[in-house]
Length: 584
Image 1 (tube, rainbow, N blue to C red):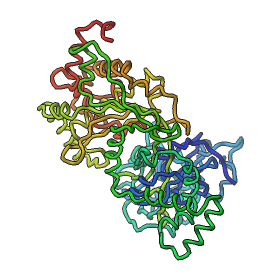
Image 2 (cartoon, rainbow, N blue to C red):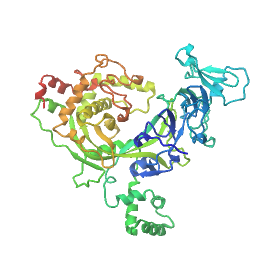
Image 3 (cartoon, rainbow, N blue to C red):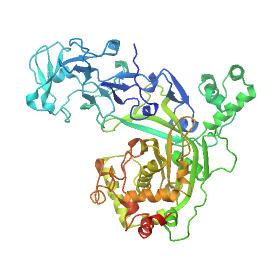
Image 4 (cartoon, rainbow, N blue to C red):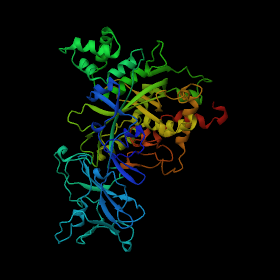
């Protein structure tokens, strides 16, 4: 018997994806890997599929994704009896069989994880008998007692054997070495035959702790020519889910090629030449070479060079350059704000595909794939449609600012902390990344107020690199990708138009000047986890983590607004001397 619980599809590529624990109305579940998803639809993006080394990207249908109850150990809040619910018991109510009134069972708060990414229930029977000298063979009878006289800490909670009376409190359960349980190399939904070789010592943690799940997500924008719509697009999308079509793409010399072509063409209502043209299109699309590191440079080039040709409203990548900003001349707030901009691109329509590669746990020593099948031919993905605007900065202005001593010193301070924390998952720390990332956060907050979008529905894409490492990039794409297949309504694109952009930039920077926690925030040498940000806090610069590509780290608003070395210091100095109503 199955039960339905509601999770948004976008959450499956991130906080509620394979391997993540979610709490829903007093129950706790873990999502299984994509190889066990029975009802899916293909997500087409050959460029990204090739970069990730898989054959297919899958998104769940309206029938949902299977989840497994975890942890299996639960307890009754009234009689304190502990019960282990196996998958075969899901047909029964999640209530205590002893207490009257359908008393609900509560999941145990603590679980066991290891540095290689595995997760399991704590062996509570062994925990209860750790300090016992009595030999007890009955494993199923446990109690989770509460001793009020011990206070409200973990020492007041005791797991006790109802058979022999042995027990142990949860005091120091999360301390390293306190749990002597060896890892069996499994995820909660796997069977013993699926076990990997792993004999590390597991650690206990709360099931909602931040170190239980670190998703590894890769996203890419759909770019021309694959993003262009034509009459065959719908047919090609359907064929990408056909194993015969995929076989013809992979092996052009297939012995039964002619017969397969005729059969497939007849089945799809096409002529053989039409099918061969679609095969050629797909083969060309899958011929991309490169790595994940090439995704952003390719997008940067495509964004900076809008095509002059006519576009179809159904295209998935529609861009146009913004008109030249109109201003009253040099020395104004407007011209100072826009003087460092190389180009402003309005993105009327975009399609983003987000893929969950896998996840880490605890110390992030090993990534667990989101597909645990032996062949690993697919990964979970979603596609979203939206709009946005790109601010591309002059390379000369960025380079000159990067040479400032204070800028280099602040950047080096954060870089040393990233190295000490071994935060290898974060983007490389450079002055331009810190600048553009902080600007993106201030713009996200200001845009949410001006355009009416909730901040959680907006996103950032930071285009930055060293000139010696490839094409020099210095830009920020602010976009929303939370709409349906029809995209969004154009409110965000209008924020990049010349009549609105200067006011938006000014509003974002002025908001960055004032923080309710100043001067503590602006003068703070380290903020956030590991001290990986400096002048940035919840009151001035942080955004929902779903909107940030660096998990709200690597931020410093003084790099933008400081009167000595801030990138926008000249514009803000002029703004202070101009009456507010005369600025625009």
